Amino acid sequence: MKGKWHIGLIRVVTQEDPALRELHGNRIMEYFPELEVESRCIPDQPEGIHSDELKDLAVPKILRLAESFHGKDALIVSCADDPGVPELQKLLSIPVVGAGSSTALLARRYGPRAGILGITDYAPSPYGSMFGEGLINLGRPQGVNSTLDLMTPEGRAAVENLALRLKDAGAQSIALACTGMSTIGVAGPLRRLTGLPVVDPVLAEGLCALYECLNTAYGK
Image 1: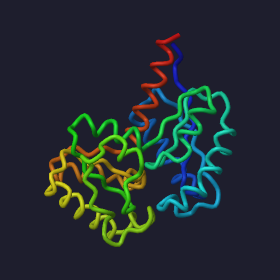
Image 2 (image 1 turned 60 degrees about the vertical axis):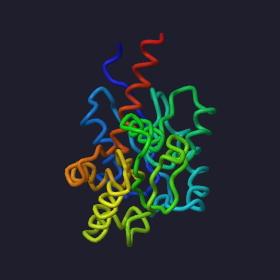
Image 3 (image 1 turned 60 degrees about the horizontal axis):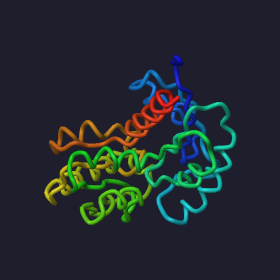
Image 4 (image 1 turned 180 degrees about the vertical axis):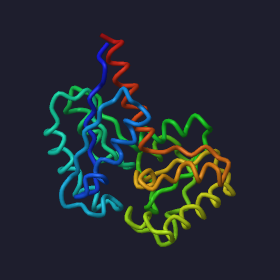
C-alpha cells in the first residue's frame, strides 16, 4: 500500500493569501497524515458561494479547475453545497468528495434530526437529501451574509446564538453547512456550548476522502 494518497482540493472562495488558501488542506493533513493535499482556488469568487446565483457562476470554474489536477487519488470540493460534485463524479475516474454530503452523512449517525448551521437561509441540497423533513433549519446567523462575516466577533456570536436555538428546537446534532465554519474553528466551541455533536465539514470531507482512498486500495 502506498505511503500517502494525493488529494486535490478545490476552494470556492478566491484566496490570494497562501495561508488562507491552504488552510483546509493543512487541517486535513493534520488530522489525516495519510493524505497529501494540494489546494487551489477558483478565480473571481471573493465571497465564495452563498446564493444559487453564485453557485451557478462557480460550477463551470470548478469543472475547469478540476482538469488542472493530474495524478491525484481523489478530489475534494470544499464547499457545503457540493457545487460541481455530481458532474465531476461522472467525468472523472477518481473519487470526488463534497463537503456537504460528507457532513450530512456523518451527522446522520447521531439521529434523524439535525440542525443545520450555515450562511444561507436555504439548506444546501446534500443536507435536505439526507434528512428530509428531519432537518431543522432556522436560517442563517443574524448579520451573516457571507463567509467573510464569520471572521468577525459579531459573526461568531451570531453563530453561537443560532446553535443554542437549534438545540432548543430539538436538534440531535449540528451539521455545519459552510466550510468557513471550519476556517474559524467553531466546531469545538459549539460542541462545548451546546453539548451536542457538531460535525465539521472540512474534517468530514477529509475523512470521506481517506475512506475512498482506502476503499479503492482494498478493492484492487
